[in-house]
Length: 238
Image 1: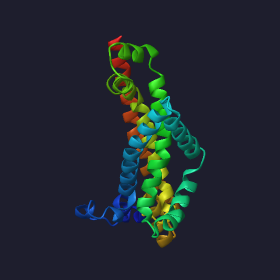
Image 2 (image 1 turned 30 degrees about the vertical axis):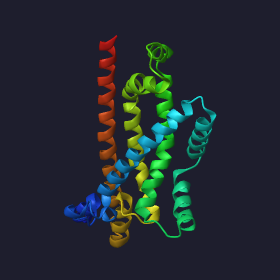
Image 3 (image 1 turned 90 degrees about the horizontal axis):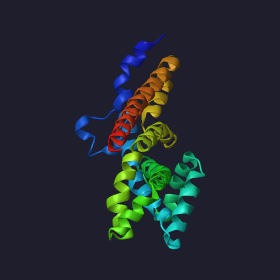
Image 4 (image 1 turned 60 degrees about the vertical axis):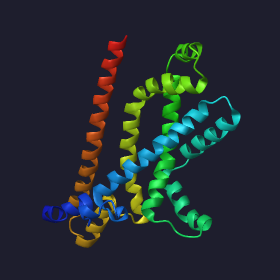
């Protein structure tokens, strides 16, 4: 067993060669598990707003809002994330005349891909509320937009939080696909150390799997705690 190799490279697995004072000015140079977390955070942040817009557009009765949202959600959910990454990486130079950094490309694809799933979460969360909520809000003199903004969405978003966290966990694991484009995230650092040492493959990949598990377990535990809290709030409100 060669666990000494894992110990010597453990900091590289966590944040690559990044210096902490350079994380934000030079975000493309971040590596290891830190890179995976940053990509997941940026991806879910952008996906939230994209998904919120797509979900509300799909609920709209106006065809010119609903049809593009349905097309986007169904098309993206029907293709593998890896294919989307390749598609954007090789199409971007044709459209804008220059190549995009691999880090930026993968984060953008994470936003687009996860946004389609968030859109479905938003749609399901709104439809799960009793129809009387919207009717009561409209009866009080609010417009459709005001009723959605001040009455429906605050209630629906509270119920969506566990689903958002679960999607964040899924996206965190999907960041491993960025290694295909050479992004120095957690999986890529494992490949680099394994190729360099060549005698500790088992130990290296057990460590990588353990780090992914630890990260996802923390997020999943937080999701379960949120679900328990929401259940208590809903029981108290009844």
